Amino acid sequence: MKLNSIQVRFLSVLLLCYTSGNSQTKTNNEGLLSNIGIAGSLSEINNLATGTITNDGDLYVYNHYNNNGTVTFTAGSNGMTRMKGLLGSQNISGSTIMQWYNCEFDNSIVQPAFHLSNQLSIAGNADFFQGIVDDDSFGGLMIFENAASHSNVDDASFVDGFVRKNGNQQFRFPIGDNQQYRYAAISNPITATDAFSGKYFWQNSNPLYPHSNRDNLITLIDNAEYWIIEKTQGNSNIFLTLTWDVDTTPTAIYATPIDEIHIVRWDVAQGKWIDEGGVADSVTKEVSTVINPLTQYGVFTLARVKTIVPCSGNSLIVHNLISSSYTDSKNDYFSIEGIENCPNNKVAIFNRWGVKVFETENYNSNGNIFDGYSQARATLNNSERLPDGTYFYFVEVTDEQSGSTNKFSGYLFLN
Image 1 (cartoon, rainbow, N blue to C red):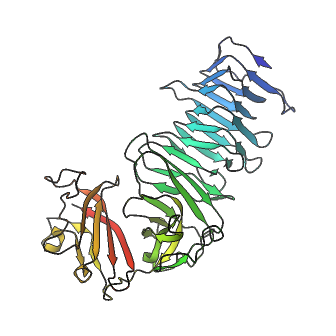
Image 2 (image 1 turned 30 degrees about the vertical axis):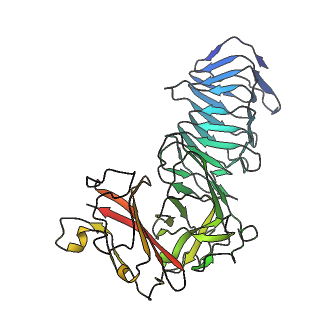
Image 3 (image 1 turned 120 degrees about the vertical axis):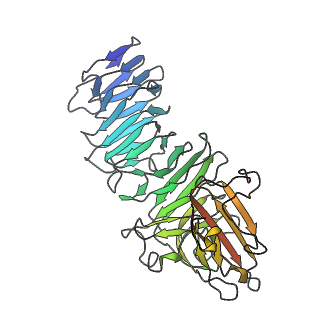
């Protein structure tokens, strides 16, 4: 069936083709199609190079969807594309990116339900109701634009492969592998033109990235899974959050004490795993890199890291509240008991966007403290007190004799 160049508007009708029992039948569009109501197709939709499909209504796709022309929506509209499998897996293919606003993936016939070989841009919300979207095996890419979101992600509905996030909003990547949903999350990039990409692998990283090559304070590396997080575009750096799960993560990784659970990264230049720090939460099963926002990207996984301070065998006690309302003078500034025994140290404070507001060496010496005012050059105005809220601290301590370095990080509350 071919639709000519006359503009067609679908007004609350189920259209395009009702060819039951023949999944090879195509509806070829070489002109202009504009949907403002309810429309659908039981045959494959094939948008030719000269064709334009503008979906500002509710489009039901029960078969394959191929695009070599233009698939888009009108700015300000609330179009919905529903991939509703009836005949088996559905191909989302073509040579030109598809631009959808809202979409729904609903196919329980087979897994993976959706074979994505094209690029698919989501501007609104993607509802992963049922069915895995596989772009890893088929060479496609799912892109979430700035302010785009997703819902209903679980072990039966996620993206198997890379997902790209454009924009300056925090984001949880709806990624997984082999019917296991295992997200990674990033904090807010600075600008709307930034882009980050993420992918999860439920496999041992050791054959490609040997676990024997690692920082001396890393005692155990997750041998069942890893993530790739890449900075695709822009100059922003972010905080990273990974998770553990009883179905995929080795028990030894998330054993107590959870303070020893960190995020580690394979450093290509050094050819070894390095500690990126982290703060673990036993309730959410999340580990965040609350340290210098990541400046290097690539392969990440979970690990256990020694938390004993290497200098003189001392322990550090962190008081993570700064408040002038308390009578205890230690709450007037960011107090780290014991750090005076470790003079070879670095301390940095970041806001929730990853902007550095304080940085110093040899902390707690000669009044060298953080009291709620920005002292970082070229960041924020240091003449005014910083806004109340949650910040992140990063402490790095190096033993002068052994040269080993330990990293501590966590939340700091300014009130």
